[in-house]
Length: 320
Ligand SMILES: NC(=O)c1ccc[n+]([C@@H]2O[C@H](COP(=O)([O-])OP(=O)(O)OC[C@H]3O[C@@H](n4cnc5c(N)ncnc54)[C@H](OP(=O)(O)O)[C@@H]3O)[C@@H](O)[C@H]2O)c1
Image (cartoon, rainbow, N blue to C red; front, side, top):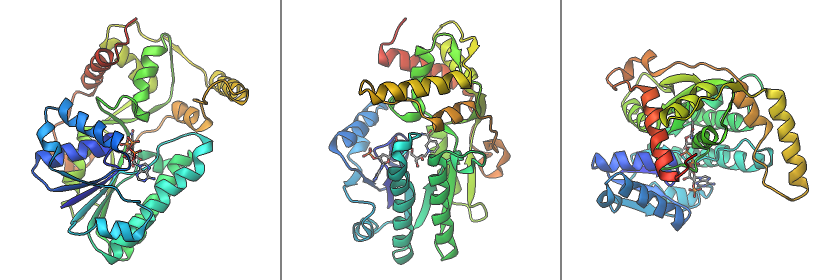
């Protein structure tokens, strides 16, 4: 049996769907009924309503070793997706507690009640210059896993780039679609690696059978944010964004929104960490550099983004 943490999130739900399609028995951890219902809707959206009932759902606190130990009963593999993704300075403690402490608790428990571990990290863990706090916590999470490996844990680490998917339009990474629809002329010059959620799942499941390779980056396509925004806009026939928004202007806007927030008017949406991300150019090893993924079909990534854009437009009813 496979245990999935963070099963109510975008990636966790994709793991559940694929594993149940493969007739694997799966136990999934959830915190709220509402989020669990969202996963039921995701299964229905993918015409897999019946498979949802094959998932055994449990609600436990991941920072409670005894509850984690109980959840590990009969488990051979843990897919650890639970994490907080945030670039907001106010979330620093929460980021540490979620991304580091929960991973530490899981690793410690796995050392007394062994099962294999697949830890979903992020390319953000590789950031060296001016790393975001989120990136630092994902890196510290990895260190917990490497410590576990030293102590005898069998584990793999995957570091996906920005993950794209349908349905979970409120997910942090999919807010790029909202941006692309909202910002008619503006885009951002930074560049990063992207991957489809389905491909993260396929590659991860391939990796866990490997003895030689422990950790990989999962990136199928590099693009600047400008390119991504324009691929989305092209997909729905919108005029392309022609002006790269300068970092200085965005930092000014951030200070302005912070000031307005202090007056109590609106929620802070811009943070320095997010801005750094939007202006950093980074390249990673892509899928085709790994022999282990050679049997996974490469997708036309730009076409995939355009199709997502059409779906986003249809489902959000955002038309200009
Ligand atoms: N999205 C990306 O672009 C991206 C890129 C690279 C790596 N990753 C990594 O991929 C993994 C999954 O990301 P995602 O996009 O699926 O994120 P997501 O949609 O935000 O889902 C996060 C999941 O973690 C759970 N969670 C958060 N805090 C928790 C806590 N304290 N205790 C228990 N569960 C908790 C959430 O539960 P609730 O539903 O109850 O909140 C949710 O199920 C994360 O490790 C993330 O760092 C994501």
